[in-house]
Image (cartoon, rainbow, N blue to C red; front, side):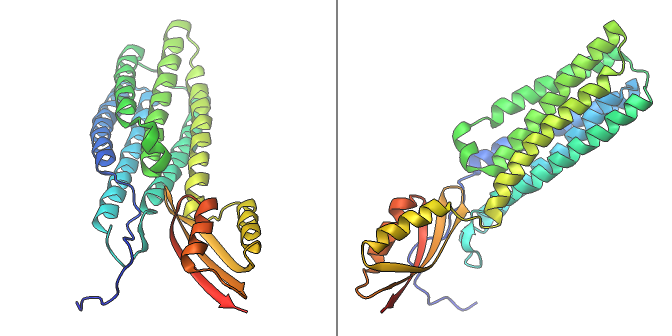
Length: 293
């Protein structure tokens, strides 16, 4: 391939440094997959629909972790690929969005399964099911501690999605244990599917929040109109009028902007960039079109 003659002013790699996060997700993936196999086998043997359903839910989450691992690998592999206009910063948002969709599907399936179990209750070997459910909860708690990192979750939606999957698994495990204990000692079998519905509603709420957050970035959602007004007022004082302006997020802590202005005594490009950065501290890439009138 012919070497490019373009002199790039700066790097276009605005992705998250995710080597550590990828390692964490890999560990949780294997823990989740092992417990998934255990719960499906135990659920089938004991006749516990709650345990069997939880096992399949964990299987769906294992698939989501694979999506996260792929997103990290893809972003790193293409970090300096000039085919991506602003780098691979949005890959983590795409992974987070895909995982959130999977999370929502899991919640809907939980509701369907729970309703079916209300209509057609099943006999359960409570002792065996409770033991396996407790083991699953312990693994989920360990996984949550492995993934928990408040600083990185603010910037890495892929990691945030993985963390929410673990919390969802922990929630379903807790609800399953409570339902199994009530069923064993109080004979209230219907509490098991009711707990499943409650857990599904909470998971849907988490999923909706993550979908809303990640989709806004994937769809190039702009900044608030008030920010544009502030920039416009600042430029008006410098005898400059905005013809067109676009601002969008290209990675977790990076924004890009295109600005078209008109002025009888225009400022330098660097001065316009400085004015933008005062209102948009995350600006990393700016293109300015200046029209003299």
